[in-house]
Image 1 (cartoon, rainbow over the protein chains, first blue to last red):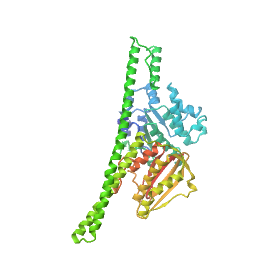
Image 2: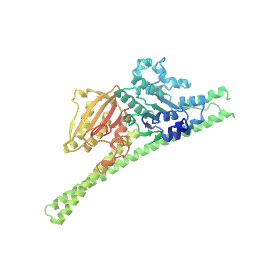
Image 3: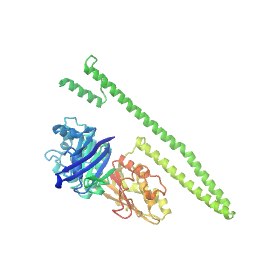
Image 4: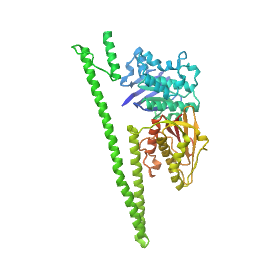
Length: 220
Length: 293
């Protein structure tokens, strides 16, 4: 069963002479529980694609369906709440809230949603990501790799329909990257999470179950 | 808007259902009471389908077990009769002349081939049985802190004989280095590592060298297995761990394409994983097994 479907996505900027086709008729399907990577050089359109998939930007044409919902039908607050409930984001720059503890960061999306924290599940996630001993500290006290592990835990915590990861190891050294990717991969499998990861590095892309290449706004 | 009390009751109904302890509160002519009845009925059918699924899983496990058990005897018989056939051929071989000699040589080749295919079948049935037990949870993977050196030793011992036949040598870490510990199930992980080593032996050139070494990161102990074979192309790198996948170059070789899949499944049960270094990155083949520290 497909958890994410993107159909004929197009994103054009400008017009006439200055028309730029950032995305030109891209269609993908992601199965539930799958770990897929999208690989492309900078300027290939991969980030534009991820923004479309995550509802962070609107396509010029085409549609994105996540968990049976066509997200182009959602506007304003509804889209915002949809993203909070259904999509877990992992960014290159970690994006943790600096003023609250690691644990509070992890459960933040759940609490924003007014849901009860499933303690057993969260403990399992925390244990799996090897951050049990860091729960009380502020994010700034952690290394980059540890911060990204917290971000993965946060993405898993709210049991979203899909996790979108944008160059998750872009700011990390090779060794730390391997740890973070390994944990992303194994925790995704363990908790049956669907992951779509964007990267420019083919070795990183290889960690996924399936890889698609994007070039000049097309899938090749 | 629905009354707050109704919403509260609905939320409670859901919470109770999630905890598996929902009971209908009241029986009257209200819509809420009717909804509770429907809800109870829905939960009931879901529970039944879960039970059916469990029964189905059990039946399947039984079935696989039967297949594995019942195919053993005929496979052993095939092996035995092939052996007898060979002996008979050898007896005739001594005093046969010209054409008959040629024919006997061909017969011998056929007998060898039957034997090889029988072994392949045996390996396949064996792997499928293990896989089904692993996936159905009949056999559990129990990961615990264990010495990695012991794992290497056990796995290498299992393939040493086969390697020797093709003059392949092993370079392994010295024992003081293999004090490293990781979290894994000794028996299953040995199986996983043997599959990787077995591949390395199979695809190494005659007289080649297989190097096994350990490295570490914060979270993982990595076991590298490198050989002097052709390695895996980048294109095949994600596909080789699929079920029954075989690269085009090795279609003719022995093997059934289940070993690496089994390996990946075993490792994922203990929060580890495996990856291959494609042959555009290095000469020869390299697999890396990641075990949680």
